[in-house]
Length: 96
Image (cartoon, rainbow, N blue to C red):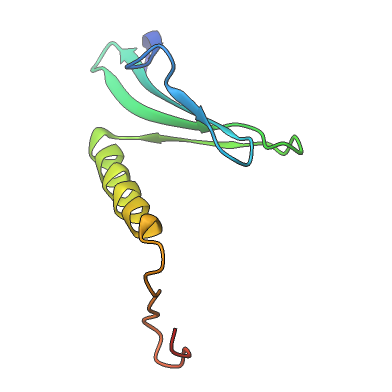
C-alpha cells in the first residue's frame, strides 16, 4: 500500500483535555491517502501520566468513535447521579 500523504487534523483549535489525574487526551482525525483508497480514523492519544508513565493511543473507525461516544455519554450520566444506589448484576453480591 503506497501512501501519498498523511494529514492530522482536529475539529477545533484545542481538541484535547487534561484529566484531573494529569493525563492529556487528544482527539484528532488521521487521514491516510494511499493510492488505492483513502483511509480516515478518529484517534485518541492518552498522554503520559504525572509519574511519566507512557500513555496509549487508539485509532477508531467513524462507527467505532460514535459507539465510544455513546458509551461515554451513558456512563457520564450514570456517574452524575449522585446518591443513586449502584446495583450489581452478580447474584452473590451483597445488596447495595
